[in-house]
Amino acid sequence: MTTEVTTAAGRGTVRRLAGTLHRRPRLRLTLLLTAPLLWLAVLYLGSLAVLFVSAFWTTDSFTSQVVKVWSTDNFHELFTTPVFRQVILRSVGVALAVTALCALIAFPVAFYTARVARPRLRPLLVVAILTPLWASYLVKVYAWRLILSEGGLADWMLAPFGLGGPGFGLPATVLTLTYLWLPYMILPIHTALEQLPANLLDASADLGARAGRTFRSVVLPMVLPSVAAGSVFTFSLSLGDYITVQIVGGKTQLIGNLVYSNIELNLPMAAALGTVPVVVIVVYLLAIRRTGALNSL
Image (cartoon, rainbow, N blue to C red):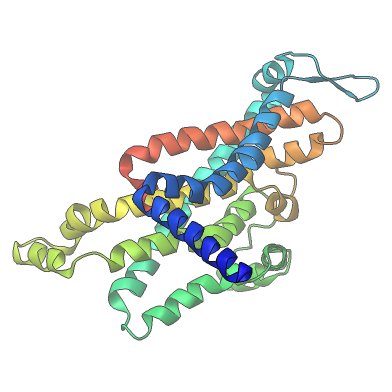
């Protein structure tokens, strides 16, 4: 009898709790989001806050120990030293170049997979686009190192034309990063083109517009937010990458390499360097926010 009373009381409590949550959707939403938001605030935003604070510390030149004294010397050195400025501008340029190349390559590929290919083949083509993401990052980069090495596949393919491969350096870095992040640009463009109403293209043709005018006036305005959404991934991933340039970049230095090389010797300077990609990406997100790209993510 006691067990039955306890069970009935427990069921009543659960029902009252369920009724309370049903009547108060805001409370239900708050309970659902508390854990992930707490994780985001403590681990992600907390780590960024520690990074930003430590960028204002200094390092003892004799012992290499971190001195927790507030100073702006790291940022002053960061923006007054020519080498640092060159590396920052080079890193942003590489990220922009990779983003532009990904957009130029992704659009025709996505147009074929979304509008030209047979409906039965479209899922298979999407799987083929995603297949490189299943391989290891290092395997893909080292594969490109073999391709671009002296006497490699690039030299062999260009030899009949009297040309040679780019070798190791900045062009090889841009090429490899473009290959790595290309699927992140193709997928959002493919989705946008797949959802593009066919009657809009028919209406444009009925009104006498040619293919170029239809592309500029109908297709591009509707797909541009998806291009911007894909650029968020290609730009941010390229800006923060430091392994690819070490493998295929030769003597090229990007901001990720400087962060990695200063972690052991000068942690505050590494933190100051690490804040630069964060600030650049935030500015980039604010710049494309007006395009509606963030709604396409």
